[in-house]
Length: 244
Image (cartoon, rainbow, N blue to C red; front, side):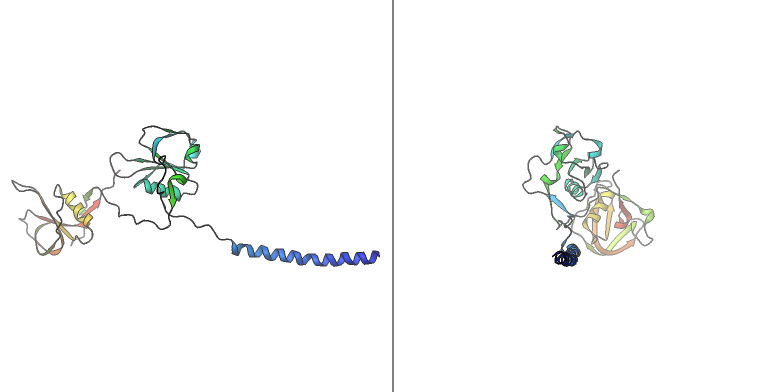
């Protein structure tokens, strides 16, 4: 009887590896079924977001809850996108710049409820990411950045570029948009803002009873004339003056 028992034990021992093999197989299969969660690359304001979104105030938080220094951004939604695409960001604040477009964006690693928020007129608006923004991986096209002021860079112009050529234009293809004649730089801005189709622009300063003139052209033949009051320019003669 004892022999029979030991034989049965041996049989069960030999069966054990088969169960182990099955486990090993299921382990190797696991990675194929695991898919990484899609990463969100674009955040937009939540439709019908609660009124608490964008409340002015201040927070009392530990320095560890601040994610770096405030960053300069184009608008509040750019700040929301920055927070959404920053791994540990839960809250952000936005404060518009005083004398120029855009504003400053500060990110925080804790939800607003944990930052001891107190409402007051600071000009700084706070947003809880999960409450106020949502993921949208089909980004809305952003309009090209506009420049508020252009300055001349005549010294960097190519030799065949018209950067203040006195003269006249013939066979011209005029753009029927009135350029800003308040100063040369604003006339340049009118042409650059119009787009690449604006190849030349002319500027004639005010003199005697004649008002200043700014004209935009798609093309034409410019001929030099040293006695002319009118000067011709191209877009490459000017660059954007970055606000400091």
